[in-house]
Image 1 (spheres, one colour):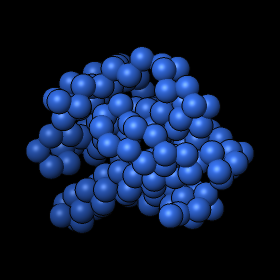
Image 2 (cartoon, one colour; image 1 turned 135 degrees about the vertical axis):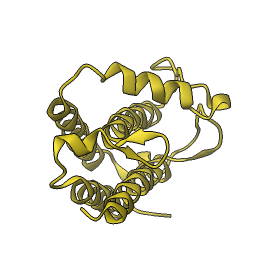
Image 3 (cartoon, helix red, strand yellow; image 1 turned 120 degrees about the vertical axis):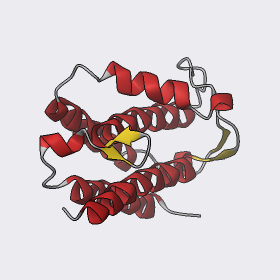
Length: 162
């Protein structure tokens, strides 16, 4: 099983990897499609929303209060409706504001994680979307999720030669 320090390192790596994938993109490029579905901006909105979701779930499990918030994602629709709502909720906001939200959420998440006793992070829980695992496993999944999206952005940039 991963340790807290290993998960912190993975999360920090994912954060830096995403920053590198986004670095230097001009505003007009942020509205271009990456693949068939989302723009770069949509991906960032999606990542902000999921980071908050992972953080909220992790905090609830550490407090052993799984009913601390209403879980509104319907996993039966592959999270499409929830993802679309999260992107739409940020549609009217400036891109810089969304990037700042992402940075603030990531920093808060890492700070919170640094202060949680490791034994609490090893607590096994059932997740509202199915499956079970420890908070450390959840946070490792969070880091992997961010890296997967960063890879898509990087591959898109490479294919477009910029």
